[in-house]
Length: 112
Length: 115
Image (cartoon, rainbow over all chains, first blue to last red; front, side, top):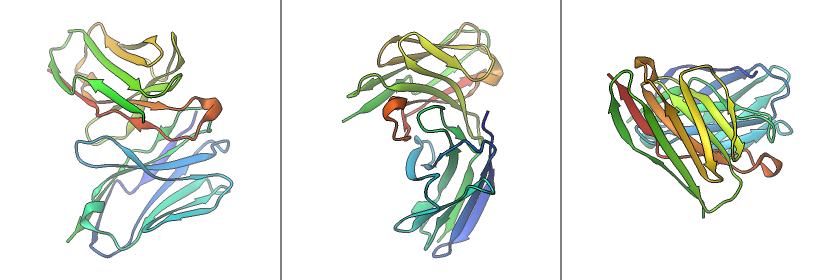
C-alpha cells in the first residue's frame, strides 16, 4: 500500500515569512495529492490539490509543487498570517481506485 | 448542497464497554464513506471505507467494526473498547470513484476517551 512521510512535524515562522512543508510518497501509481488544513478542534478541510499531470499549482498565497520522479510534493505558503496557524496534512491516492493515505501532519505556528 | 453529520461529538467510555458512532450524509447519493482515526498529535489513519451498502473494507486489524445499513449511513462500532481506542474519529464522504474529484469532506468529528 501507499506510505506518506511528512516533514517537519512542527514549524514556527514569523508573520510575513514563507513556510514550506514537504511530503514523500512510496507508490509511483499515486496520481492525486491534496493538502488539508485542520484548525484546533475542527475538521480537516481541503486547501489545495494537485494531480500528477501537473508540476505546480498556485492559489493566492499557497502553492503546491510535485516531483513525480523523486516522488515528493511540497506546500508553500507565502506572506504567512496568524490565521495560517493550524495543522497541515498532505495525502496521496490513486484517484478513483484507492482511499487517501495521509501524512502525519505539520503543526504550523505563525508568530505575530 | 451536501452535508455530513456525525455523533456523538464527545464521549467518555470505560474500558470494555461497547461503542457506536454514527454518520449520515445528506444531499448526495451513492457516496464513498470513510472512517478515519486521529490519535493525539498524530496523523489521520484510515480505518474503514465503503463504496456501497453492505460493502466494507478494513484497512487495519483491530477490535473495531463498521457497517453501512443504508446508502448514506455509516456506523463505527466496538463490542469492547480498549484504552488505545481513544482518539478523534472522523467520518468522511467522497463522490463515487467513477466520478471522483478526489476531495474528502469530513464530519465534525467524535472525540472518544476510554478510561
